[in-house]
Image 1 (cartoon, rainbow, N blue to C red):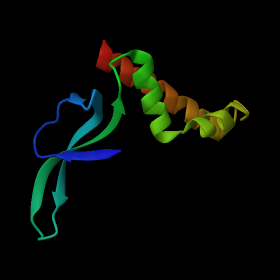
Image 2 (image 1 turned 30 degrees about the vertical axis):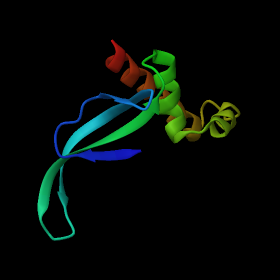
Image 3 (image 1 turned 60 degrees about the vertical axis):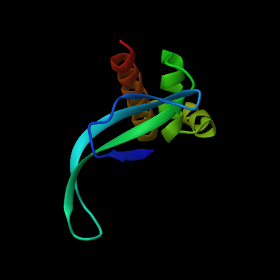
Length: 102
């Protein structure tokens, strides 16, 4: 999911018995309906129950690829473009989790 903030957002925010993890945070210029341009921060986020590595990786991956889609990817030829895109995304999620959790 994508969110916006008028100030630099925190990476971890406590939320209803869990956390919202914000990543891919970038400063952007956005034009409002009244024609004014505002500077704000755009980010992607996932909700997780805890700050465990496996939980975060699972949330990041399933945000884009639901479980049934991931099962379909397992049947792909490892040389196919579809598999390689999926695997590259998985590796990116592992890197995001490692950076976020140390």
